[in-house]
Image (cartoon, rainbow, N blue to C red; front, top):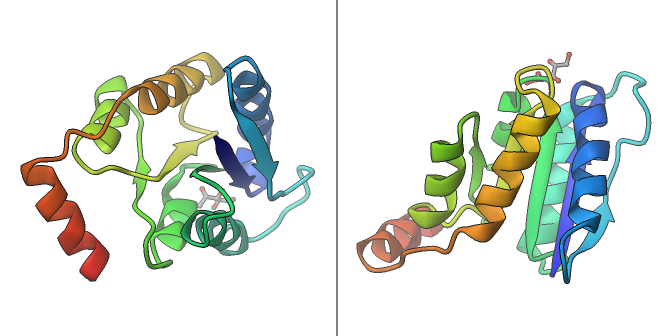
Length: 144
Ligand code: RB5
């Protein structure tokens, strides 16, 4: 599975930690779309890059990070076919996949401790989409 990652400067350190963490998982290849330093950049560019990689099939899933996770998730959700979910608790990370089939996870580097954030990544990756009535809702999201 290919997982695309992207962040602005506010999420850079967390993105690096996520990348390192993903290496410890089996069958995961990381496609890092930047940013590559803590120099100030604009999060829409990076949210778009990750979202396009997922929407175009260059990656199976994406993880985006900014300071809060908010701006970069808004950017990612502008790309058709992307369902980007901002998670700050384990329950949100689980439901993002189980009910919303989120194909991009957004995390806030200035919100979460690194350990908490990596736990959310694992929960999201290890949870399956439930389908059923949720498929109908996800289909409607895709039609928007
Ligand atoms: C950058 O300072 C900050 O605004 C950004 O990382 C993010 O939190 C935006 O939503």
